[in-house]
Length: 92
Image (cartoon, rainbow, N blue to C red; front, side, top):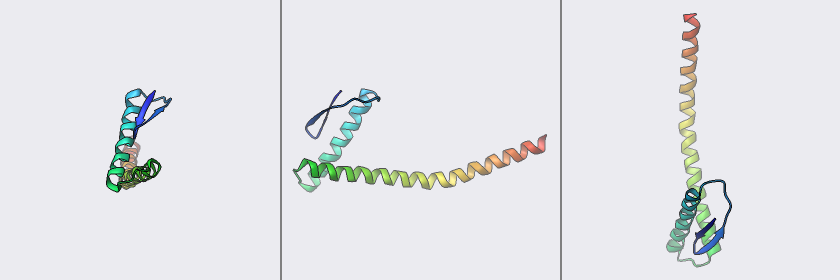
C-alpha cells in the first residue's frame, strides 16, 4: 500500500486494514506539519524527530493516566472478587 507523509510517498506492508494505516499516516503527517509550522523548520529529518518526540510525549502521558486508573481499579476489582468468594464460601 502507498501512503504519503510530509510530501513523501512510502510503500508499506501491514497486517492492519488500509483505512487504519491511512489514519496513522495522516496523524504523523499532521504532527510533522504542526512542528514545521511552529518551528519554521524546513529540514524534514529534524521535523520528523521533533514530531516523534511529540508523539512519544502523548504516548507517555496516556500510559501514565492509564496506570493512575489501573492501580485503584485493580484494587477495587480484587476487593470485589474477595467479597464474592467469601459470600460463595458462606453460602455452601
